[in-house]
Length: 131
View: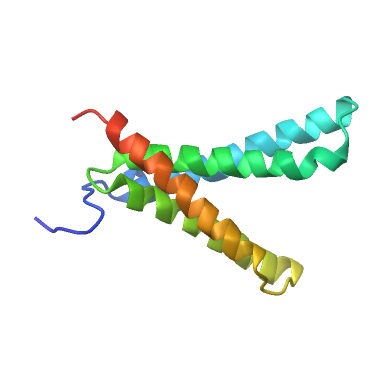
């Protein structure tokens, strides 16, 4: 039996890595579309959009960490934390390649917060898993 730091026998599309990232990206997509509809058809001001974006990202990372932590066998906090870091790295790569943004301090702070939220979700997820 092969032992790794993540202790998961699931591979392929059933992997906690794939499931966690799928949950994060699908929830970001769904919540962003919902926010766009709300902004379009209500008188909600775009000045509150930064808080809404923060809540969308935070809830998505937490949920992705929770699901991936629930699907792994040990070290759910590491699995969830790395889900947050991976999400941050993908956003940074998209921002760098598509929008030609320079590297700044804000993504580093976002990465630290993403790791914390994902790790918290992973800790809760591993404890929700059926033993």
